[in-house]
Picture 1 (spheres, rainbow, N blue to C red):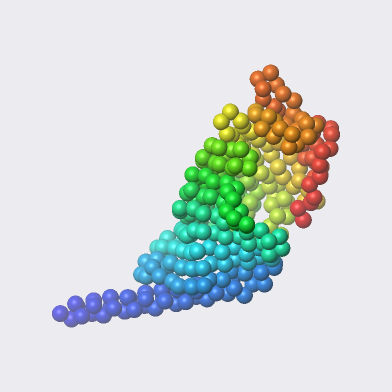
Picture 2 (cartoon, rainbow, N blue to C red):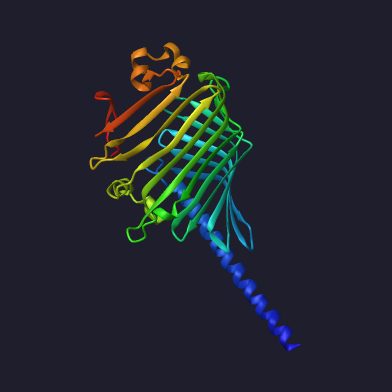
Length: 322
């Protein structure tokens, strides 16, 4: 009998200790989220919740932000609800769910847009402090201009973004990592561009990144990326609608003066005809190249010290990033 009483006391103490720890963490999480409202909204976004609560006891930590508002300079974003969830026994894996609509207001221009969707979720998983995977999944997104009335800008059946660690490119001795990027968009409709059933597929690699996610918030992160020889490799970027398509591949980076450099190969078909007279013929030829016998167009665009070149002809300038 004594053993049962002792065991019951031990269990009760463990439950009380666990409950106290969970309540303490929940309080700290709420405090940290509430502190986001103290930002100036100019250099750092000001984030507020009309209603902030926590849940998930005993094995999860859920944070609910209803009436979420993000303000940065002249732009204000409002979201009906955001829920973030982390399992206590798997703290390196977080899941975020959002409820529509998302509204955007620009106080300077007076523009207002709205993003509707049936489901939106994001997840992040770490391997130690290195990003293992970040994914965003949105079903049936529809983007509207709302002034003076709803005007469809674009809609799709699916939009995703995935960032995946590339283990073979991890250099622990240098503290560097690389991410594979994959972003598809299905059944894209854009009335303004006469796109009725478009598809977008982006495959890329970003290397030279720090292998500690905490370093991504450092003010000199871009310079560190450049100094590490970081590059953005466009493996395959494709956009198509029926028989019309455009494809791109190449490499982009920054020089020591933070100016863009690299080379991009373009191949397209039907784009020139679809653009019509919206762009002068000379500019179309410069950007898309000459027509091949099969009706497609090809062009190579080179960027040196921020100067955009087609062949030896400079056609534009990209200002330094910093």
